[in-house]
Every structure is written in structure tokens, then in C-alpha cells.
Length: 424
Image (cartoon, rainbow, N blue to C red; front, top):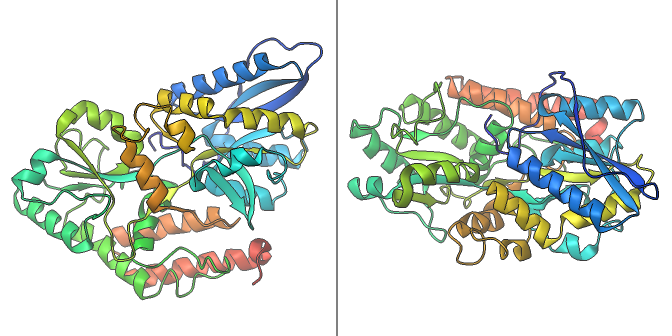
């Protein structure tokens, strides 16, 4: 999947790479940090620069960072935990944080980090389990519906706004017009060729806007009636119709349909903004996602930082994480990568995301529409099950049967794990 900071990680085994910033002074205590390796080189460079600034800002602690390939990251963390060899600081994809916390890898951050820093973060920049914060992040991303002004004008389509997004009826009307024109074989691009976490991140918000969800968030142990009830069935029927009517390509050969002009609409995240803006310039229009009845919903939560239970120097680890959460450090990450800064103070230090900035709408979308993925240790099985279910629906399976099968798989896993800390 393209760079979007949300993949739940496969289990490929690769050799780790190490970088160490600055020279270790005799008086300092070493704090080990692990982070995932990513194709976003700018993100790594900013992270290294932050480590360098922290190491130079004081003499008590020294951060030594190790790069772990993304494909083997979760496996590496799990193996290290079993061996009692975790570092002090981990970066983690936000939806796996509850699983790591339940497994005993992480310590709560309240009382360790500055309360002002915690309070200053937007909601999607914190990973929680059972009401406690276990991770914090410098950035987030936001889903949107991209199109072109010339297309809206040519086909007499209303430009959706933050205040008035498209309804389901407006979306379907637009797709019917665009399909009938003959100009677009598949008028809507939805990245259905991507695998893994994209399916939950991209399509569960649609499910939630219909009024359903992947699990009952009142108890985190049941999905019956929540995923496979009337609202879930309505979503599944709608989702399947997008492919049956050839509004969306079931198996796209690439993810360039919008930038190459083959699709009129692109349902994807803010990480594509730079590419789309470069391609279409002033013709580009960024609209909020549609409202399917329960209000617009987008995913929330990206890669974040936590402190391990086994850390011998949690004070030093906390000092570094606090340093990363300074507005200037958050802004540096946003400026370099284009990602949404995780605090309003940091946003004001950027050109794109400050109030009246040209990309401010992404910040507003995230603040208003983001729903975090379910904060339960069961999330990995929820996500993989949801992907299998959505793919089956896409490919023509009976919608109700697919939903029911997913519910059975999720609830069986939760039962096998005695509720993952929640009351069954």
C-alpha cells in the first residue's frame, strides 16, 4: 500500500538497520528507540533531526535509534517482548496500540508525559486502551473525495463543502451521470487494489456513516447486530452496487486512474494531495467524504510513540517523547511530509495547515469527522476479517452471509481470548 501511515504490518522477516545520531557522552544514559522503516524518507530524516536536537539539548539522556523493516515490525516487537529485550521507545501503528497494551508491552503515559502536551494533542493523535493513553503522535492523515472543478462544471455537479457534504443520493446521481457520459469507464477510484489495513481505514468509515460498526463499542466483545444488522446490510448492498454498476473497478491494475484522467473522483487520503495538486493545479477540488446518513466519517490515528514497561529509564524516554510533542517539532514533521500536524499550536507554524492555510480543510476534516478504529486488542482480527468480508462482497458474495460470517469470526476470537480484558 502507498505511504499512508496506517498499515497493520505483515510478517516478512528482514534484517534490521541501525542509525545512531550524535556521539554518546560518558555521562549520559542510553535510551534505545525502535521505529519502522518507511519509504517516506523525509519522515525518517525529520525523526533523525529531532533525535539529534534532543541529544544536543541536554547531557542526561542519549537516544539511539534502530530502524526495523515495516513488514516485520510487529513480529520483531512480539519476539523482543517474549525475550525481554524491548527498547524503551516504540513507534506503533495506532490501531495496534490496544493489543500491545493488553499484552503488557506498554506503560500508560499519564503521569509520565507533560499533561499540557497530552491535552494539546488532537484526539486522533492519542492511542488508548480501557481509558488510558498509551501512545501519542506527531501527525495524522484524512480521507477526502478529490475531483476537478472542470468536471463538476461540465456535468453540473454541486461542489460539496465541509458544511454540506454530498449525500448518498448525490454521490449515486453523480456516478450515474459520469458513467453514462462514456468519458469514464470507472468514474470513482477507491484503491480497491490495495491490501491490508486500507480496507478498514478506507471502507469502515462508510459503514459507520450508514450507522453500523465493526464492533459494539459499548462493550468491545460483540459484533452481532452492529456489523450485520440493517445498517450493515445497507452498507454492504451499497458497496457491492458500486462494482456491479461498474462505478468502481473491482481489480484495478494501478492506482493512477485519477491523476491520469481515467477517473473523475478519487476516494483516498490527504497523503495524495501533493501528487494531485501537482497534476491538476487550480483545477483540483478537495471535498469532504459523503454523508451516508449518520454524518461524514473518516478514519483517524496514524503511527505513534509509546514507552515500554521494561524500560529502565522511563523518565528519559518521557523526556524525549515530550520533546517530540513540542509545536516546533510537530510542525517540522508536517512541513517536511505534508501530513496533518497533531496540535493546533503546531498547525499555526505551518503554511498549509494554519488557519486560512491552503490545506487547512484536511485539519478540519480530521477534527470534525475522524473516528478512531476500535480501541480493543481484538482489532487485528477485526481488521483482517473486515478485509476478507469486504473483498467477498466486492466480488459478488451474498451480503448478509458475508456479514454474518465476519461476526462469527470476530466474536469467536474475542471469546477465545476471554474478552481481551473487557467483560463478556
